[in-house]
Amino acid sequence: MRPNRFHHVLRIGPVQVGTHHDGRGRTKHTAVCTAPRCEFSADYNTRAAAELAARTHRCQPR
Image (tube, rainbow, N blue to C red; front, side, top):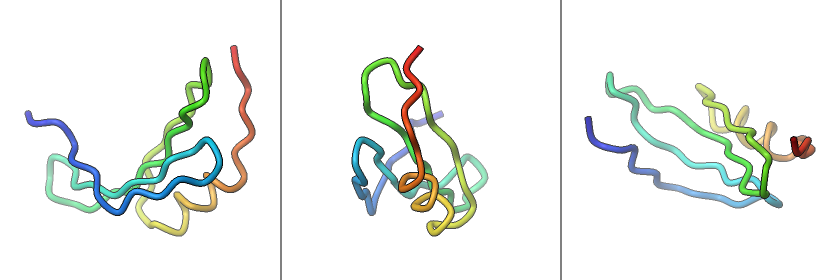
């Protein structure tokens, strides 16, 4: 399986939002926090949901 190829990448604070196609060809939107020791990442069906998650994310480092 080839790795995800993200396009339309946007950075909101420490969170990056990107669009990719999953293994079944569906478009998915992912939000990932790039802060050290923060393990937040999630897939969403809509770009608006991913951007909302990025805007409201607060890091909880472990």
